[in-house]
View 1 (cartoon, helix red, strand yellow):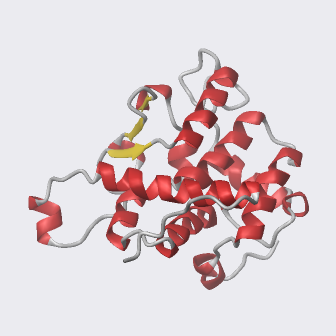
View 2 (cartoon, helix red, strand yellow):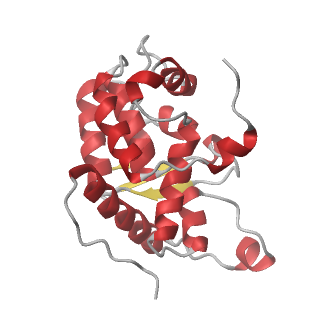
Amino acid sequence: IEKPSDSVERERVLNEKEIKTFWENLEEVPVTEGTRLAFKLLLVLGQRRGETATAEWQEFDLNKQTWLIPGKKNKNGKPHKVPLTSLAIELLEEAKEIAGESQWVFPGLSGDKSLNPGTISQAIIKNRDTFGIAHFTGHDLRRSVASYMGELGVDEFHISKVLNHTTQGVTSKHYNRHTYDPEKRQALETWERKLKSILTGKKAKVVNLKR
């Protein structure tokens, strides 16, 4: 299969119709139910494919509605706290029923290992017709989350915090110790309201944060 150009990969953002089609057609893709939930969580929270696929239950506090990704699992080597929205918690509760006593949120087929991040990529490649939308990658889901948050008026700096991108500058690196947890939660909840309106076709109260 010919690899798409890098420029296409960097620019791909799913439109609203594609997001709805992706979500609905996931039910027809021949993957495990855990893998299906992992796909959905990628679109709800916008975290990296590897972090999502290898998530462990010990990283989550469903009572406090947080997911603390350890530094060893992300690019900048620092722990990253992700606020959990209501839809994310629903997906995780479903995953828990499937995972049982496993330490992994999304166990692999063997049960003693997590879902392989490559499984997500292979599922996309092997089921393009079933997904019913133009070529996309797991990373394009993450980019789509970021792009919609920007469209909804979320500040670019706060989007970078949600995505756990390294912030440049001496102040950010050495002096500013604010966690931005409230701002990250607001950003993800803003996106979730938009996502739900896309999936249901009903107009929801999506507050545009642009002033």
